[in-house]
Image (cartoon, rainbow, N blue to C red; front, side, top):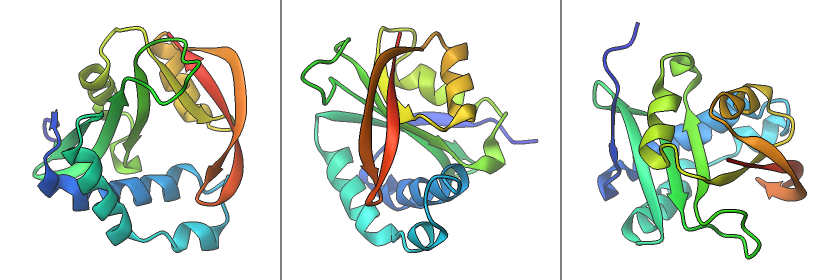
Length: 162
């Protein structure tokens, strides 16, 4: 049982915690998509530096989920990175540590970042847990697919819209 999770806007001092969750969540969610060596080689410091830049800019909004002062998830949303975006709002990312699956943390992050607004997102095509989560929240595959680089490896992604 988890204490009440606090979801709030990220501040620059959250960058290290976000980077930790980013890498750990990839290791937990993408073990079937990426090689073990690739996942083991992910480094937190460069990610934390990048997160400081992201939090400091005005283009991307970042939220964190905090459990007893420890970041356990994050979400990002922006006006979108695609020229042919189906909606003017993109959920760029949402990750929660496996230890908090089923706790409502992901839902709280989704609600904070985009609420019920029309939005779109890209996700790995082979990610059934995420697909079920987004389907419960009204997202459907809109037909767009691409191959994108994930840690330097090609991964098929699909676009979902609501």
